[in-house]
Length: 142
Image 1: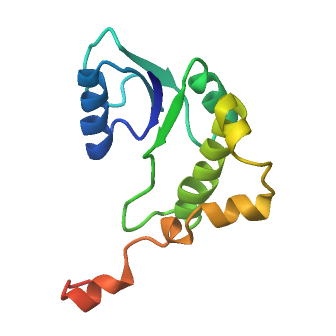
Image 2: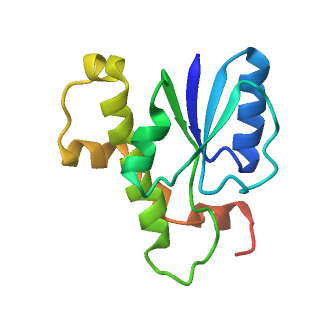
């Protein structure tokens, strides 16, 4: 299967990409730069340069793919740009979701047309909230 993966250079993404390759899948890894990290050489791994904030790069990256796995996120505790969490975790996720619906014909057959309001409901508001406040209940020192 041809699988497009965002966030493939992060810890979870690297493990997932390795598992997909081991399984025999062809992996299209979205990276902001070809020099993002040590990307293993594999005949079934192709780097697609782009960004989840750039819908046109997502459309190009998803060509030939049958599935999309979205792992990219801004997971740091702080950003000098106040809107970074929302931009990456909400807008970026929306971009990936919308491009996947456009690119993957099976998704158009399975899912009815969605309004922006319905898409917003599908994107978790927790994705932009940063660290969980509930960790205080478990004794974490934040």
